[in-house]
Length: 509
Image (cartoon, rainbow, N blue to C red; front, side):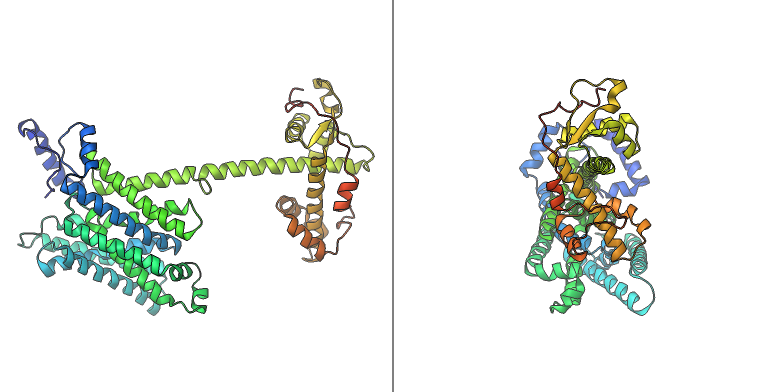
């Protein structure tokens, strides 16, 4: 039976054909019927509906919004620890394991009393947790397999019990199967009060046991060493997680409740590296996704509330996944592109140093043709790389005027002081690492070049100083070439030249 709608009813005659079709559709697709929305199918102006929702003057809307806020807080807080502890499958198992308890709670009271259903579902969830632990301890089965066994087994028992209840002659069993897919519009004041108690308990638990939960979530061995009761904190967290799942069943159902545990916390996980911030963001995303889903369901025509809540949370996750400032796909692509450009600049500077070294540092000038030969690229590619160095201020031009295509490879440039210093640093890092691998790691001298090509770009000054101390300030690498020191860099620094043409000089050739 569908809950009473929140929208004003109009004349039934124009809607008679639609209602007959809807009844047939619901009988053919019961899942859609159970994923009920807030409001009925009567179309009115969306502005009026939005104002009606935001004003909270309807009791059903008020119950849904308050229940959603409480559900978002409890699921968001506990979901943060689920993601941090990598217990996503456990949350899904728990949400399915409570279904037999829902049926047993109804059989206990013969009514859809929220308290009896809560007790039965919580007991079933805790029993499922104990069964998973028992299977792990008494058999060779791993945790993921044990979770799969409990999920499928308890869910099958729940379905069978719900089918039996539907055939019994109770007067209040209609709608009991709504716990499968959720029926947010049917939230009562008692449901909201129970959600509020669980949300308040989640806040108190997270505040009182903040340090203990943090330690046990990331390093159980260290937590034991400092006297934290690891097993007690684990079962306390699972108990709170069970309560959060049970109170959310009426709103989103057994099938989707795990999404409200995982999705807001996963979204927060992409935006921060601090646990406290993750918990706050997870709760906020849970509340925002739930309220937004309820709002869209109230405005839309025949749109289920529970799935829309999950879709709203998924939309937040999509935004964080693509546009997160640190771990988002766009930010990672930008960092990778910047790093690739930086490596290319440093490789070009290193090649310029090698050209000067090959000539015995007899001259400061380097030609585009010599750079192309050292880099093993075409002259056009060498011009582009030199132009990037010019734009970064690492080189200055010796030959003035607009180059012609025929003479482009003869254009001369010198390393600016900043370019010379960076080129010497890259060469120093490369040769120091080669010497370290041959002396300390006992690599063959002809097997160290490729590794040094990668590590030369990431060695910091502190690591370089440590390598110099370990190697006792060496002067030559395994191949007998000079390792530039700070004194060499300052002594052999080129003279600073006058201002040169702007970027794009070489590309115009």
